[in-house]
Image (tube, rainbow, N blue to C red; front, top):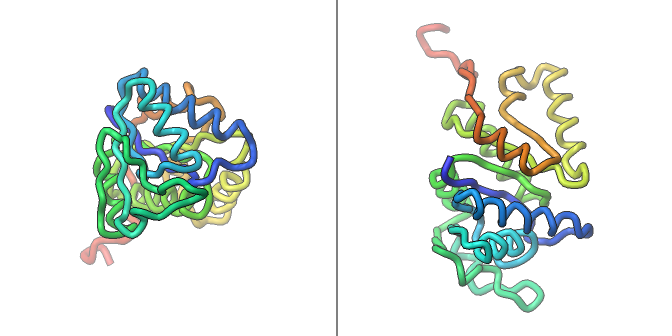
Length: 199
């Protein structure tokens, strides 16, 4: 594992613990020599995370759609202009595909709709066998407890297979999460769509 993509909010959230966790994650990635891949933002948890990684001597690659370049949030430009590298792509779809290409593992921190969507898309790609990279949640202040309960409900109701549910790792402790991602061994995933010859 050489690089980690982090999905997180463009808002800092209401609790200081969210920003502290983002800062700690950025620093730890740098200390472990892991390259940070993220959405290229300069605001919210995205800004805290990337600045902490850079301050600790880490490498940070941002990927941002051109439609967001030059926009401002509370007097700050959306894009981060001091990264190791900022890649500008054509669309949100291209952004997610490029981050997935660059990363060896994925972490979701607290965030809103965009973070949820990124997490579930990368999970869906894993479920379909498009990649075999580890995916984890950093569950700061039990933020993701309702979502994890929903995943368990989907399993209980037959909408997820057990091996699909196991694709999503979750920890409240950052060190434990990073260790789980590094040690992850993917399981064979049963195809959801049968080969035509089997029908």
